[in-house]
Image (cartoon, rainbow, N blue to C red; front, side):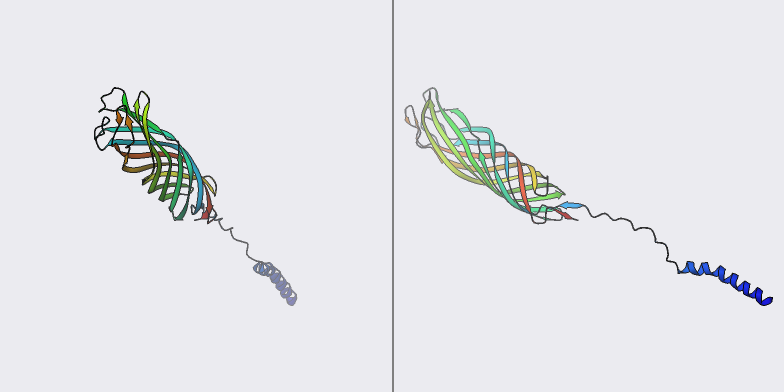
Length: 266
């Protein structure tokens, strides 16, 4: 009887211990899922070669000063100011390189000009009433070669530029006496400098648009108009010192051949 009880007790103890042993053999439940880490934001990469076109307006400001007394025409120091405005447009191309948020590059532009203006000044030394000088200045085209430096705020670029500038311009002087008594034309290419700046916005990985202001200064250069004649004969030596400046406001679009695919990760 005692043995039977001992056997039953052993069975009860074994049965009670079996679930605990089985539970110890089971794998632990999985822990909480790791937090999702989103990828870093995309950053626009301005590095690459680009080409494009521009259109806008240009304002020409010229000061014409007689540097020597002219027989029956103007005294030395007589000055004529000429200001005019016209439509301009052309093409540009360049290359950018971006490191961190700084963008540096070079750019070349060519701009056709429809700017033309005239100013009539009375010939103060002439003894004949109605004699006058008509000055016409008409730039045909502008060209620039500049360096650029900018600060990129992702797909927005703020930049400044500066460098060399050229202007092909036509200077026409006429002696008026109830009509054109005589005329002389000088067409020259002048050189100077330019500074400017603007803001550029990337519409896609390759296409961007920009708004830009440029100031071009060509200094002062003297031109001789010695073939003019008035109602009493040749005017004589008529040198003009022409100081010339141009301001431009341009809207432009560029297509960029991106080296890095347009967008990169931080």
